[in-house]
Image: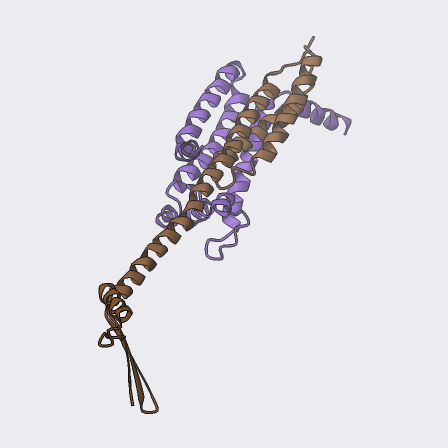
Length: 147
Length: 162
């Protein structure tokens, strides 16, 4: 019993010493929550709790309006309809899906190859940043066009 | 002998970095960009506290520093959304004025057309008929002049029949 407790405490302390793994796990959890949100709320009922603040203030739909609808429709396999709701929906969905996949793969590689951890983290930061910029470029252009 | 790492401020740093990354993603989505200011400020506070703890205890400062920097950038992007919304709202504010101008223009044109037009209104009631004839502006002016001169032959534009 005490041995088991000791093992658990060692595992926990090891885990605590690896912020990269903690961050990966939490980010993967957040992405799963986003997917769950898109799955739970249905586009037919239109019961999404998050409303566009931008549209409420300006009265004009913004570039990201319809993203929740788009995600829900993609999860239900209606890609054409999703494209009509938001033309960037598929791109953003693929980014989140890809990030979920990358979090799992990078965590696995991090544990498996301890000697290349620094390179792995650097590759992850650069790769994810580039992916982020590519995915959200239309949104960034929209923001900086007006500001 | 295993080296003991001092991880003071590390947990706060992790929390700051995760909050900052999420804030960054939220900040670039215009629909929820304004909300991102709140987690952004939380990320900055966590990052700053984590960084100060780490520097006080000589522990690694990379994670809290990253959280702090990403948090600051995310808050700046999120804050810029206020200007975006303001500018669009200002632009939208001009639309009612433009619509009003267009409506006024149309109204003026219609009134002018009616004034220039020859309109005949015939009202019949209990065998009495009243006909009101309006001629164009020039004719009206001529009629007015004629009436002023005392010319009774001028058409005063109202005929009453019994």
